[in-house]
Image 1 (cartoon, rainbow, N blue to C red):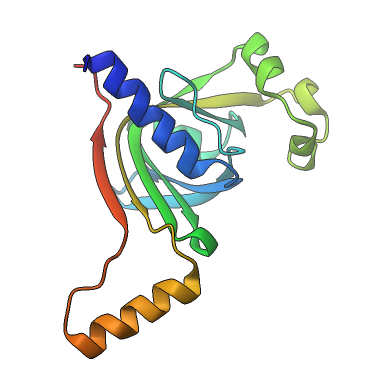
Image 2 (image 1 turned 90 degrees about the vertical axis):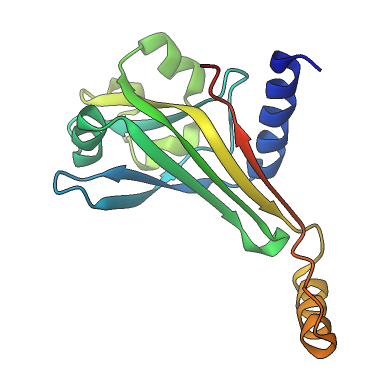
Length: 170
């Protein structure tokens, strides 16, 4: 299998896992070196090239952090489906009006009342370089029963699929 085909399959798996998860935690590095997380709306979309986009106000502290330290982490969780995804990548501020128009969704008006006419509106682009996911296809009840069974028998519980993905083309 070619590297490009494998990368496309990996990105498709990540897209499938985060589909329907409207919010993730975006973690950046603060000025004192500590990690700083906040919820961000993504609408569960990852582009074909591995980019994830967020609308923001350009004058926010998170943008200040990203401009000083480009590496960020995105954490997605859907406990009802036992799906968890962590993605690392490089972030940057983008002020491309055409891209904003392409990505705009009416529900974003809750954060940006003037829509694309907000004077400070911008995008954060995160290019994903690494990811790890945990996917247990069973329901919460089945998962709990499996844990109880493992404790009773002394066998290791099956926690589903766990994989690390390196998407960095370098």
